Amino acid sequence: EALEYATKAVRLNPSSLEILDTMATIYGMLDRHEESLSSRLRLHQLFPADLNTLLAICRSYDQHMDDPGKCFEFASLAMRVKPEDPRVLDAMGWASYRTGKQLEGEDLLRQSIRLGPTASAHLHLAQVFMGKNEPVKAKEQLQLAEDLATDTETKAEIDRLKDDIARS
Image (tube, rainbow, N blue to C red; front, top):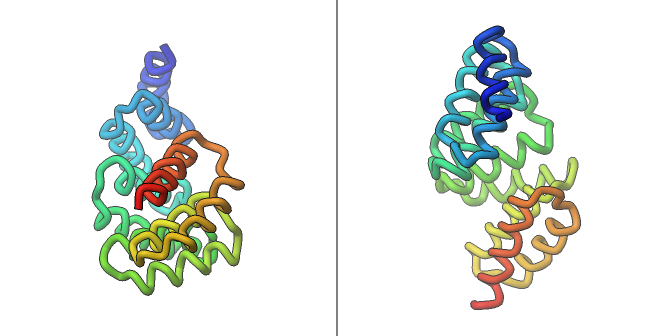
């Protein structure tokens, strides 16, 4: 039902940041990730320097499209907008790590945590430590992530990594 109202709202005001963002969010909640990304890309065309849109596109490419190269592209754009933002450093660090720049990625993730710890940055650093076969450090980062996590998607990823550590 929300999708129906959002679709009508888009028809009435197709250039509204708030309406297009709501539409993308609804699509994401319905697991219609390609349509969510399409809405966010439309937002990016209209508002190319909107940091939240750039980060949402980056997350979408990372989590739902499994395209670290595109995630890196949008994280780089976010770095131009606000390079000192911990969320941007987290996105850039994770995108760098996933595109083969492991040392740079780890450094950016650590910078992000120093500036403003988030569940996402700790989770990403835990994944870096798992990749380096350092399960003790990964567990520490997962605990910190768990303490900060508020959304179910992040909590589920933390639980999945904890299971991976337990099995190794």
